[in-house]
Length: 454
Image (cartoon, rainbow, N blue to C red; front, side, top):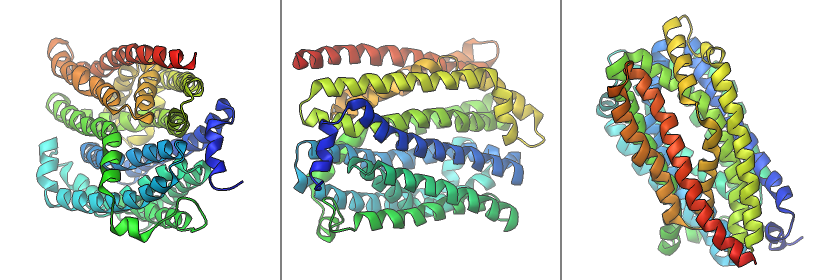
């Protein structure tokens, strides 16, 4: 099979088989990544202490901000790559790779350096206390210093999936997780580097796997491979188009940053460091379920993008329904775990901190109330993005965060008997309204594709 024929499979092979082929490696990679996120929190909670876990929660807004810029480049470029391959525009597909490397390096250096300069004032603004400031700063100093590595690693991982190498993308992610799980306890418990050790393990693992990704893309026999000319002399048209497609992901993560700031500041005011630490623990556990759905999306997007570019609406709708059904099954499992196993899930994060365990378990039960419908909302947003409908994807990205969640977060704590419960309840309320909005928009669009199919 030549290099062009292997991409045409996306428009010809059975959709269900393709989704399994693409989604399973992505799900395994995302779940492995979220498992590390959980294990990392347990290592920090057991090896450094509750103050470190509370401080780590303060890092969420900054992590969301850096992820916002990284996703704008990585997801935008990988989606554009899928569409161009579907259109058999192989010359542009080749140049997308070099432009992605250029954008990730530039953005990673500028953003990481800028945040490092203002790190202490930023953390104070987020609500850092005298207890939580030091561990939060120690963790983020190292993460931000390695920001360019993180951006490149994640960006190239997305392009591996778009260029019909989902298994290699999975291996890169799993490799990072394995290295993290080996290095983190070594640095925390043996080297006694505390929370800095956790951050160093993360950056070093990503750096090692980034080298492996660059080696894969440096093979000149592949249709899409690194080209010094496109890296050093970027095509601004490609950069602009990639950033436009990736804008919904940027907005989602930027909104996540704003929400995280609002959550942390509100919880600091209403419940102190214990409530903030509970929020950090709940996020790490819920991240496990959400990442599985994101893995499904990553499997769907190259297939949807290719078949949209190849004008095959029946295949496009088929992959949408399969992905949405699988996502709903995943989030239903998340609801069951969060509702009936909450105490068991949060206990390993909080060594000798019963109040933290109780607060986190209670908050989790409230936050996952409508999780079964969340998968549909996430898939709908990704679907519009995968076919280049940036405006619709942006709107859906904003509805949950800005239009529904922020007002709920501002109002509910002030009208409920327990203000902290108002914070927890704002999540299921926003999820319900956002899902209803996304399904309405999806219904309208699906009617158009069905008409084209007939």
